[in-house]
Length: 238
View 1 (cartoon, rainbow, N blue to C red):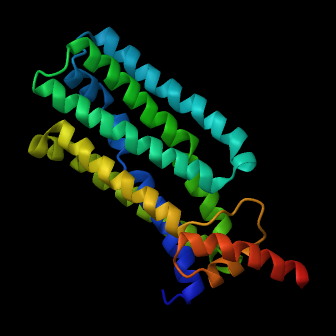
View 2: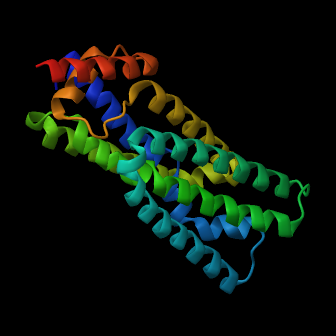
């Protein structure tokens, strides 16, 4: 509860990733995807089921892709690709629902865009921030603090998930479904900046190298990348 500056920076990165994983609205989108598709104009129960199955397939396929890429590409590139893609999908979905409500978009185009953006959101989530939040949490903390820190991160994750899922319908009634996804898009855009500035690349690094990285980092994404090379040099000299 009274962390050193190094551990504080580790916890900022770990807890922040856990928070943003849920704050972008993944659970709300998955739980209420039939409602979203219905608002986009899908009336048939069979078509609603088919669209929902497509969401599940997208999630499964891209989780497998993440497993294949996480060690080849690295954690941070996948996280950035994931959150940038999520932000774009949320923005397009919000615009689609807004234009549809004003009668400025044909029904067929709205349905196609809604299915594409929801599946795209789930795909980008599953290839990056969905699975990698736990990979990152298992790597950044020193062994003596890992159990407590990962447990705290999971608590943040689940509390954020519950808050988003339980408030989603109320938010939709207050500002419309399009307004809710506009807010999620804004949060997702913040997550891109957070990952760039506060989360370093941990792939292939030892515990000592990671601790040196957080010890030398000054809170700047640019400085983190420079100090990473310095940390490796110091470890090899030892």
